[in-house]
Image 1 (cartoon, rainbow, N blue to C red):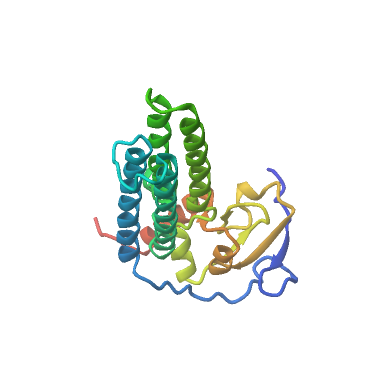
Image 2: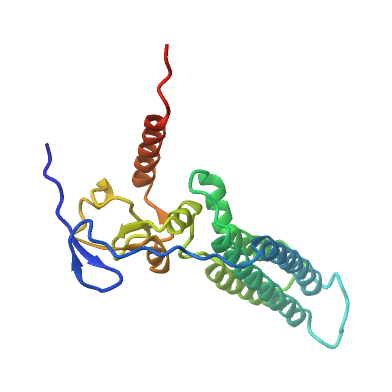
Amino acid sequence: MAEKKTHKIVSATTGQTVKPGKRPTAAAVQQTGNATGLRIGAVILWVVALAFEVLAIALILEKLLILPQIAPLYKGIAALVLDLICVVIGSQLWKKANHIDPASQKNAVKFWLWNNMGVIVSAVAFLPFIIILLTNKDADKKTKAVGAVVAAVFLAISGLASYDWNPLSQEAVEQAQMGSDVYWTAHGKKFHLYEDCQALDRSEELTTGTAEQAIEAGKGTVCKFCEKRYEKERTLSDEAALPAVNE
């Protein structure tokens, strides 16, 4: 049998080395805000952003003739700026909603989609503009070059601003609300429910604290190995608590 890995464990509260099992008292996480309202606001802003993209295409390709004293290229870029503003603000609202009402890790597709929605919208808000502009035969080379570069830069800016670098899961919030004490590493993105988790075998030093502290440290999801072990132990505990049935 393999020898159990010995870790150096540091308290997130005191910064002092602690013995396994000697962890700080947990505190329940508090969630505030209206996630539904924030998501509705995000969707409205994203729809407006797409409208500005359509407007940018119409202006730069001279399909819509307004403000003739201004060059079509500049009018198109102005519309793209408004497109960018709406995408970024909408994404911030969406990310805030996800931290109030996060998706579950158990539904991998929804969890990925929910936490990458802003990036997806960013692509939709700028890629069609770039493709349509570059493939249009009537647009001159300068308009194509400048317009495509500006849109590409805006795409990168909105994508980076929209990406959730520290996604939060429903399971992580549940652990925080229960006042659970957990473990995490300096460079990992997840926290662990068990010190002897197989994913920690190569880690020399662990930090321990409340799940809320782990979330604040950017560890907003639960290790899948720990989650499966936790669910199994809970199932066995529930079964053991059932009264015996006489045959």
